[in-house]
Image (cartoon, rainbow, N blue to C red; front, side, top):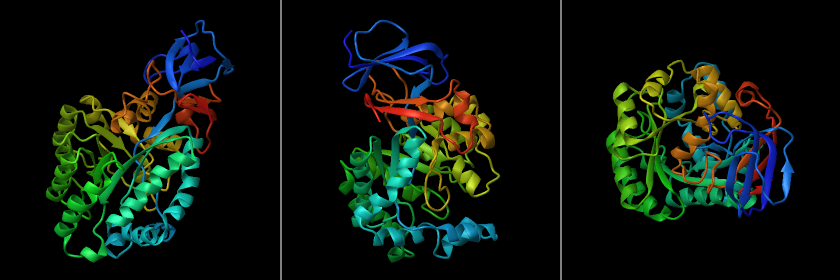
Length: 393
C-alpha cells in the first residue's frame, strides 16, 4: 500500500477505550490515515517515535475563544461574595465583554485570540469549536465568526464556528427580548450560512426562555444549520430535552439535568458536553448527573469552555483532570470526552476523533507511555509534537 509517511515504534491509542497497541504504527497519504495498528511493512519515509504514546489529536468542542477585554475584576467580586447572576444583572458579565468586543477590530480580535489558541494547541488540540456571542449585533457577530475562521489560516488547526447570537440580551433591546430573538432569527441566522456550522442559545433564567430558544432552533434548521444548547447550568428549564427534540449535536453544562432530559438526549443521540472549568471557577457544588448519563449510555464530551467570565481555561488536559477530579470520570471517559465524543458533539465523527483508515491524520504525540498520564498531571503538558492533516507541526 502506498503512503507518504509512516510513524513507527509508538504506543498507539487509536480509539479511546480500546486496548493500547504496544508496538503501533500509523501510515498516512494525502493527509489521511491509511493504516493505524500493529507494526507492519510499508515502503515510505519512516519516523521512529521512540515508544512515545500516540493518540488522536484532541478536540475542544466548546469554547468562546474570540473576545476582547478582561474580567478579572469580576473574579474579585465573586471572591467577595457576589453571584454570577448579581454581576450580570448589574451590567457586568457577558455584557461587559460585549462592550469590549464591539469596540475591537477584527484584526484585534484575531491578535487577542492567538495566545489562547496557542496554549490549547500546546495541550494537544487539533480541532476547536469557537462561538460568537459577544457582539450581539449582526455586524459584530459576523466580525467574531470571521476572526474565528481566520485562525485556521494562522495556525495548523481545524476551527468549527457556532453562532451564539442568543447569548445575552443587548442593552439596545432592554425589556424587548422577543424583538431581539426576531433579529437573531431573521437577520443573523440567514447571514451566517456558510460561515457558521451550528447555532447555539443560552437557555437560562438570565438568558433566554425555552420558547425563545425553540424559535431560534426552528430558524436554524430552516437554514440548514445544526443546533447546540447551553442547558441546565444554573437551573432546570428542560432545555436539554428541547434540544434533543431538535436533534441537537450537544447540550452543554448540564449540572441541573434531570432524568427526562437524560432519556431525551439518549434517544436523540445528543452528546452531553461537560464543562468542569466553569464548575470549578464558579465554585459550583451541584454536580452533573454523571451516573445517570452513564446508565443511559449518553456520550460525554469534555471541553474547556474557554471564556473571559466563567472559565478562563486554555488547557484541554486541565479540563480532563478537572472532569476526573470533580466529576469522577474515569481515564477512558476523559479520553473519549476529548476525542470520539467531542467529534460527535461537532458532527465530525466521520473525520476526526479516532485513528482509522480514511480519517484525517491528526496525531498527538506525547512524552509519556500511559494514557493516564494525560489526565494525571496538573499544569504541565507532556506534548512532544503534533501531526495535523499528515504534517508535523
